Amino acid sequence: MSIEFDATRWGQVKEVAREWWAGRLKRPLIQIRLQGRDPQRPASRHPFMGFTARYPKSVTPEEIVDVWDYELSKTEFLGDAFPDIWPNFGPGIIAGFLGARVKPEEHTVWFEPVALKMPAELRLACDLENPWFRRVR
Image (tube, rainbow, N blue to C red; front, top):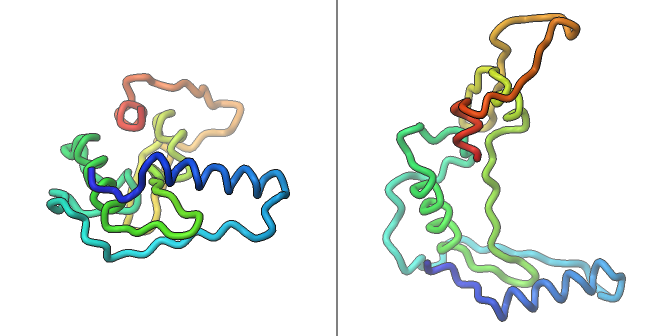
C-alpha cells in the first residue's frame, strides 16, 4: 500500500489526541486532508462510491478495500489528521438485516419495508444468511 502514514506518525497523532482529551493540549485538534497526492500505485478497477451499499454484489470486499486504499493513497494527512474510512451502508442497514429492501442511491440509502405492519405484529429476527448481513460481516 502507498498510503503516506506510518507507525511513528500514528503514535504522534494518538499522543496529541490523548493530551486533548485530558484537557492538557492548549489548542484544538486540527485535521487537514489534502487531495491530489501522487498515489504511487495504479488506480483501482472501481470508482469510489461514497456509500458502500452502492457497489454491486459482483464487486468483492477486497476490491472495495482496494478502492479505499487508492483514495487514501491520493490524500496527504496534515496536522492531526490520519487515514480513516467509513464503510457506509446507510443509517438503517439493520433494517436490511431484518429483511427490509435496501435501495442505495448516489447520496443516500433508503430502506423500505417488505410489508406494512403494526408494531405489535412485528416479529424481528436477524437472518444470518441475509445478503446484506453477509456483505457487512
